[in-house]
Image (tube, rainbow, N blue to C red):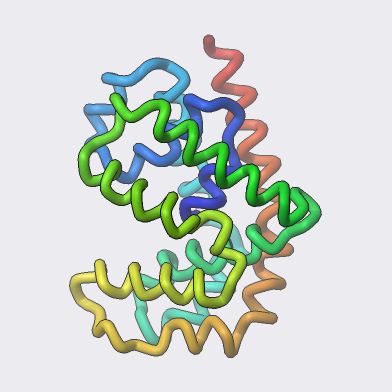
Length: 197
């Protein structure tokens, strides 16, 4: 999953920080943080493992795999944030805006735990309100291009965004089949984390 989903599938401020940190730290560094942040890191990993194994995600990858092969999962992750950001069963538009503002506030309040490269990204993320703007086609286009730019072995001009637009209905169905399962899994994983405290 991408940034919005990971921020949404949290149950405390510390978990928000951990969910974001996971992609920016080495495995051995996870124990340098308070327990709540460690829980967020653990939750992030559980979410990714569950996502990779879900049949609806396997189906969604077929949209992108002819273009990007093994990178298809990264583009599915970005796509799922678009559908989550437009899912008004969880929040109204104002609710999603408030969620985004809360995440930026929490991350800024925990600056002492953030690596420098993440701090630089956070400035851009907050300035352009990435989390809220995933609901817009242009927001997802920006994110897709970001993934292309970072991928070592992909041409930057591959029409991944066009594939997203052309298969939006298929991807929506995959989201509908997948996300309620992921939410239930995240809640169960969090309950286990709380039991072990």
